[in-house]
Image 1 (cartoon, rainbow, N blue to C red):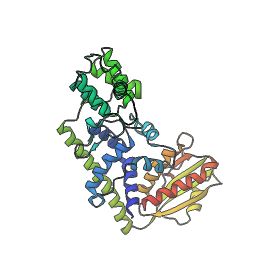
Image 2: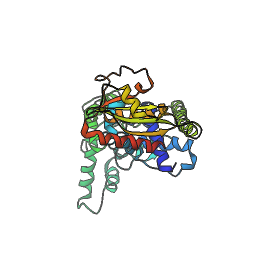
Image 3: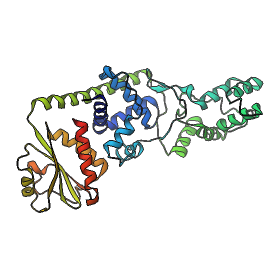
Image 4: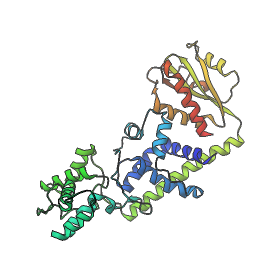
Length: 362
């Protein structure tokens, strides 16, 4: 299996089998809501632990790409997180945040808002203005001092030369690292109103991102160690699952997975231990659907594990038809598949998704 295909398979297996666990641990380590690039960075660390030969692979779009492929374009990263994991999400981080792989988090002072507030709390008067001037583009503005004060106000909400105490108790370690300039401005406005720091964090998170009850407390060293061990276990489990499938592929007789159209609005994903007279057997099993047609059947080593991945992919893309259709012979071998409500104009799309998933699993 080529490296890109192996990585894609690993990510999709992680998402479908352990996605919520991974998301929960990644958010806690980084103290950032579900974010595609951040998840990919955490993934890179633990993937390289189980596959050190892929150490140079630093792709930050793994999760977004895999979710798009997994759902055949139905979902992007945010819609998938919202629908399947119910996690808080953000689209973007502030520019130039530095990710520290050894600590599994972004460096606090790489956030421009935090950097500027620290400067404001450390310096006063002309010394403060001089440093703020040096933070701006000196080639653009004619009045450097006025511009520096204006830029700073966009972060801290109040004029630079006003004396205000609400920033003096700023808790940098609890500040949402994903807050951009406008978020920080609103947050500082809440502080200026006398709202306590932690409460201001909660209100700003909700008002700006509709995120509530997000844990902003820094991870202790012991908590980081425990989460790291849990993630190591998850990644080893995914590796073993993939290795097991590869081993079985070499040693076990072939079985089959199939995509069947029962009628214009109903399809089925299923498996069988034999392809002999498959369509005839399916027509006999589903005798109330005389238009039944096998669109595709593919050889696999163990159809149940492959069928599980196929079902997950189809659930991400199409509506499950369990409420509309119950197989009267569900206990039999050919009755153990999954049914989906897919209209006729989308049958070709379903076939492409079926084949695409099997290509990834090769």
